[in-house]
Image 1 (cartoon, rainbow, N blue to C red):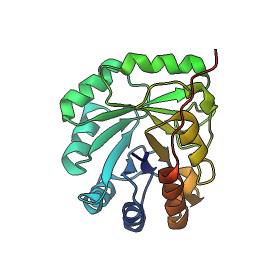
Image 2 (cartoon, helix red, strand yellow):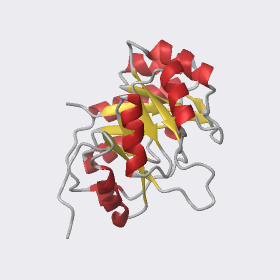
Image 3 (cartoon, helix red, strand yellow):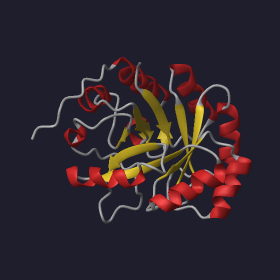
Image 4 (tube, one colour):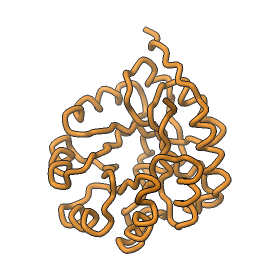
Length: 220
């Protein structure tokens, strides 16, 4: 079975359609005002409606309160909630119970020590997304186009998702090296900050889907 692909930070119907037609599994709708990919609720609702029946939609939020969670659930009706902030395992579990939807929790990674942190979410998150840890001066917790050393994931049992600095040129190697079951891209398929390029989206999906995972045991 090929790796699943999520095109995150989509902002136009054309990119939703392009991602679906090219074989992506999910599109990410960012609801975080500090992001250049931020969508207002009505914009997200329209894109989710276009995606429905063609491709899964993921609502991406950072430390959302209950009011925002409820509004997104009612108006956007995503298939998955993605939490990309400092949400605790208890908060993740609460959002999962409140919405009745699967939850993906992003875990920032700089080195192998950060991988163990993900274990705390084993009982509350449906998916773990390993993303590059943002620098202290970064505005965004993700989507910064910076990879981490994928070798720290070698030997980790799937399923898990991978993000951070992925591009059409390196995603195949990332899948082969880590055995990730889902890859998540945003800036790596953009022609300019916040503007997705349909040809890059297609190239990324093709490269990811054609890669054959070959996870290897982590060196001792």
